[in-house]
Image (cartoon, rainbow, N blue to C red):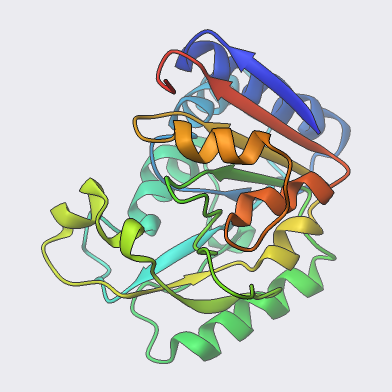
Length: 237
């Protein structure tokens, strides 16, 4: 594991972009797992700038969405799909033939997770997995629990996740999400974990103790051979 302490969000995002661009340079048709939310937004802006400077740089890269809430509509601006489309896919010109996504309004979320798992298996895994960390130490929607799921599955959302400011703004009750499992994350060739934002210090402190527990799903990353943990020290205090 490589721990990078950055002085602020900009420096954190720049380092993330350097890592991603270097991998795409080596493997242009890699499978990139994109998280939604604020943590990777700076990275996506820098990827968009790279695309503007070198329009063919991301021409072969494929993207998979990390997770999606269950219960939102396609036209909701709070779903992960909207976030990934606006911040990344449209900016890089990535169309549906290079994009794997949990359908927002999937009639059968369990079957939808099975379909996405099949897509991952057909691509022989993920090359770069972008993650944020939840205030309770979750990664994707793999929440603290007695046991964790290896593959794509429907997750029950933890009370701390449900109490987050973003979910309160949605305006409708949420209780579940479709998500990649910890096995999908752990089998990724590279993981980049961004740690930024208010309320993240307790999770970071617990993570840095190096004790592996399903009560802190992010702690499993200590077992991964190629993880970059990039901390925005200005916001995490």
